[in-house]
Structure formats: C-alpha cells, structure tokens
Image (tube, rainbow, N blue to C red; front, side, top):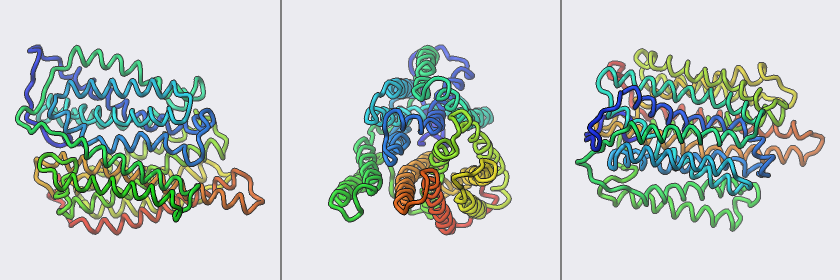
Length: 483
C-alpha cells in the first residue's frame, strides 16, 4: 500500500473544524475491519453458496478469486489515488462501491451475478483499504502514529477471527446471503460518519496521473490465467481452448509489462524496484506463500462441512484457533526478527509451514478435527504470522525510504496474486485427484474429496519448500538494521 510506511505531504482542505483524532481512527479501523472480515466470513459460507447457486467444483473458487484478483489488481492504484485526490473522496468512494457490491452479492440469484458482485467488492476494497492508512498517517505523528497503526493492525487481525464465527452464525441461523448483507448497515453508518467528520487531505505537489491501464491489463491478464487453469479440468492443457486463453493472458500481461516499462511517471509497479535482491527475494517468497496459504481456509472449510459433516457455525468456530495462531506468530515475529535476523526467520517460517502442510495432508474421510486439523492448522497459521514482519522488512530494506510504502504495497499485491493463481492451481489438482479416485471405484465421495484435498496440501508443502530456497535470494540483513 503506497501510504503504509510513509507520511505523505498532505494539505487539509475544506472545513477548518478539526474532528477528534479518535473518531478518525475509528472510521479507519471500521472500514479496514469490513475489508478483512469479508474474506474470512465468505470462506465458511462456501458450501452453502455452492448448493444454493449451483457452483461447479471448479467454479466455486471464483467466489474467492473474483474478489482477490480485483483487489490485487487495483490495490496500488487505490493507494495512489488516496494520496492524489484526497483521503475523504477516495475513502467514501471505496465505502460506497464496497457496500453496494455487498448488497448486490447478497441479492444474487446466479453464480455469475455473485461472482461479478465479488469482483466489484474487490475493487471497492482496493480503493478503501489504502485510504484507511492514509487517514491514519495524515492524522497522527510520532509515538501516537505507532499506537494508531498498532490499533489498526489489531482490529484488522480481529476481522479474521470474527469473520469465521460470524460467518458460521449468519449462515446457520439466517442464510449465506447475510455474510454479504452484514456489510451494508456498517457501510451506511460509516459513510455518514465519514461525510460528517472526515476533512480532506491530499498531496498537493504530486503528479496527478494514475496508471489505470496498468491496473486493468494486469487484472484481466491474471483473470485469464486463472480462468485457463481452472478450466483444465474440462479442457486439457494442450487443447485449443486452453492454449487460446493462455495466449490472451500472455498478451495482457505482456501489455502490462510494456506499460510499466514505458510509463515515465507513476507506473503501477516500477520494475526498477526489483533490481534490489531484498525486493526480488521477498516477493518471490510471498508469491509462493500466498499460493500455499490461501488453500488452507478454502479446502478446510469444504473438508469440515462436506466431509466431516460439520454445520457452518461449528466449522467457523474451528477456524478461531488458527486465527489466534496467526496473531501469536505475528507478535513473536516482531520480537524474534531482531534476534534471528530477517533471512533466518523467513527460513524458519517457511520450513514450519512446509511441515504443517505435510502434516495436514494426512486428513481422512473419517477424520477428527483435533487429530487431523487442529495441530497442523495451528502450525501453518503460526508460520504465516511469523513470516509477515521479516518479509516486510526485507521488501522495504532495499529501497529508498520514500519508496518504502510502495515496496510494501507491491509485497501485499504479490501475496494476493500468488493466492489467486495458487488457489486455482491447487483446486484444479484437488478436483483431478478426486475424480480419479471416484473413477477407480470402491470409494465414497468423502474418501475421494479427502484424497483430493490431501494431494493439494502436499503440493502446497512443496511450494513452501521452494519458498525456503528463495529466502536465500534475500541478502543477510544485520540485526541492528531491523528496526
């Protein structure tokens, strides 16, 4: 996010009356809570959504990927827009788009309608999330800024656990539609409060150009790539349909690269950043980590409900220890990174993750949550928490201070891109394995599904081991520099 680690040169415009800082902090936290909540709350509802809207096994992942792809494609653009056009305008725009898309998603009657609404939500989230950070860094200074960012991070983290439980409650007691409807009243109240209390602030000295075509080409290119991967369960890799789709993806992503290279001012992703081994290594690790970790929530939600027979509420509660483990890992990481150094901690985190995925691949059709899920799930989640801080340090250590926010945003985008492409690949592998087990005969649906998820987790473990190797691309950073 472009504003994450720097304070822009801001100028407040509009009302001379200054709102209390705690109100502005509350606005930023509530909005970010909505964005984070919407990821975890939907995961628990996936089986219900699949049954109601008749998603195919391969198509269901678009409930997640439609959101993630547009969020990743427009995230850096959203951060830049908040700096250039004003935190108030962009914050309110993101809220309106996100809330309206949530309403449309809740009203969807077909899989196409829901997928489109989720894509629109992703755009709204990409606009809204960086604006919340812009509000914080233009409101607070010094030690109060650190405390405000800490509160913002904690609230964002709490969104994961809350989403798991709330998603289960709403899906069980009302309908999966309410996991989307819940955003509407929150969005309305927050929008009204934003109009009343939030003053305008923007970087008045900046070049006011946006790389819109960069965002469009990378989003469409990644979408075409994911579409090609997803449809290989219907059309073989060598089929004309798959090759044509891959060709479209290559052209769009090639166009994106050309735009980034030739655009003289404010490209979405300045490729010069990747001259730094710090930036290159951390992003390579993050792409693979995102690819592996996105599969955990997706497959476990399906396993707990479709194989073990848990209802949505019980499945949601099962995710809470995993979310707590992420928080524990993140807290430990902030302390250990000073003692162990960045590269060492990244290696430790990726090795723990690989071990956790191999452990999780032992799931069975007649499995038990505490025997087959709890331990490996917590280990994987702990590893994810451990990796956030050192990867952020690595990504921002190899660039100038004023570009640290941009480097941080590129890292976050890599996580989202890796997650969407990785989920498509792993879901395709799981579906292929499930079908082969069923075709072989003498297996129930539950046994076949467990075999498919197990295979996907084994591949995710290999991804984490490859990420361990990429960790050595990052130069060793002295402990004294990790501050």
